[in-house]
Length: 333
Image 1 (tube, rainbow, N blue to C red):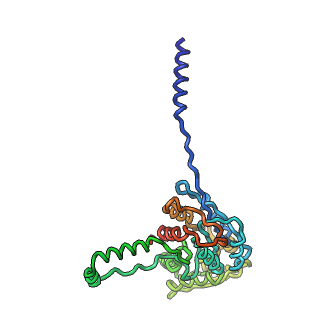
Image 2 (image 1 turned 45 degrees about the vertical axis):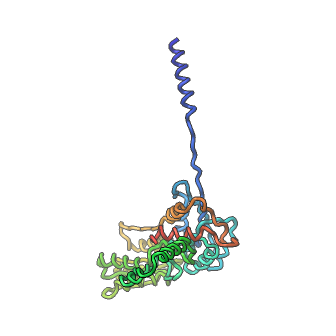
């Protein structure tokens, strides 16, 4: 009798408890981001794909859409972007080549979709890498003159100016997450000076690489012996490395495409130019986090995808606010 009563009470208790259980689900919101990568950009493509897939801010996530143009010229890249069906991005990333970069930036400007980069680019007025200098504050004399004007008119003018500033305008620029090339060159020169490299070799594989290392050499080559040689990314470089080994150049500054690092390391290793200690550092800025954070700071009712960048009839309304928010997140302006 006691067993049956206690069982009945236990069942009654369980029945009352289970009725209060509530299941809540959070619906994730996906936003598309397009990445354009040339055939040789294997490492950047993988880093972009992984970064976009596994980054989230609240319920918001990014869905990467990767485009791989067959060639690196401007027309091939632009055609790949405009003939790809079903694009609906909030931002476009890439390409890596400075030659084809402008065509994508121009198309983004027409549709007012933010264009993002994270690679070295030569000095370009349309490449936004740092905040513009702020205007100087007024001096005391100018402030005294302003005090003579009627206060009411001044308040109205300030309110009108604030209303104008609150409406962001789209800038025909690329937002580059890569460090400024002058600052990067200065940092490398400081490292070379710190380790007291009195003589070393500089290896590069293209004209842009030579341009980058020249900025480093300009800061650190007045008193030292430096050997500069060009590598062939598609050929055999044994002759170059033999020359370095003969001259006992054990310190090397290498500027090359990230996918070619292992090739040059193996060529040097064959000649016994590498010891057991070797360090390779690969850097990929977390663009996804910046994009989602900037999007989160915008009102929820205006968050929407842009549609196809080459098929829009007019500019994307969210483009200018999102671009402005990205600049604030990255540069604090």
